[in-house]
Length: 527
Image (cartoon, rainbow, N blue to C red):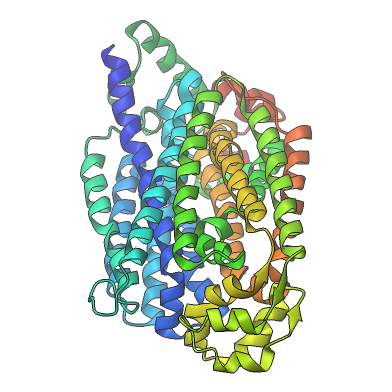
């Protein structure tokens, strides 16, 4: 059927935003060690580089709601692609810590593509397929992360001080440069995308809206879809200012929607995915894996993301949102508890035999003063070694020190990290955006989804900004324990507050979640 082909084509274009996001976000994980050594950064400074996109997203989300409502979803995506391109070029050629932070922040302003894509899918896709398409954006994000991890792994294998592109000074620039052609290709496809029919109808372009609906909807269903949109528009005044929409969003009758939206945004970020996605090579080095093995395991993590995001896409419209969220969050909490137990059980023994074995990689002369010492935590171990080496040498060789002296079974923690990633990508990862696209009433849609995205970005910024500092200050065990606690809170949120939304139209969900009729709010009352 021609309409199905058109719908799939448009959905493929919009979900490419997830792929571009994944590539942009995943690349940074491979650059962390080299950037920190290149510019001599502290834990908080490297956290600032990694979290700069999240901060940029926060800035963008403050304005994206009004902009997307004014210029439309398609034009907004074109603006976003331009931001990605400038960011990738500026990151590649950054000559200082400050320039790199600004470049990454600019790219982060494009991260609102996820909320815009979710909004677009919710407005174009039929209700019976909406969950699958929103989840497919998460699949593409997983593919993007996998491609980025693969690029990073390949670059690390090619590290050679005699090479211009792959020396320790420039390999991170090569990683960033690979994003440039990806963004250019995506930008070209966006010109084929039609505008959202709900936005067109809202702005008075009825003929254009009907034309778009006709392209993606079976002929016998077109009039029903048009009528449903018109009825919803007739009930509410969509010309009210965004400030007034914000007032409605935070009114008492919207408290259930706010609780779900803000709650899921916080749980998704504080479940620890920002730490695992952006610092995975660093985390794998903490359990004693060497540099190459750490990057290899990170690449496998990206593959896991794809597989389980595809599982979510298959199950979301069959099993429902609540079931996937409950199973996923429970698995996430148990995974983090396993990681906490693994790191709590680790010991670090510095003996003469291991020091000799390390001589081929590092100057071990300073370590002689520590031979015979045993440390009960990663924090104590690092604090003992750090004064013996320069910050540059410590950054490049921390993984080698841990690999040489740690005593624990690394595969228990590695397996738990893989299980966490799998659970995230078939539950709270894609389901958060599915729920966002469904629970927001049309009256406040342009402000609600960006608001929830803003909360998610604020929480993500916090996690990404402070993760290196948390490892140094509190240790790995306590850091992952905090993620387990946050995931457990998410279980309670889903269990007692979130209703099932599968196979329901946006208008039907509005009737369930909103206390009272939004049509009762006249423009004067809203203002």
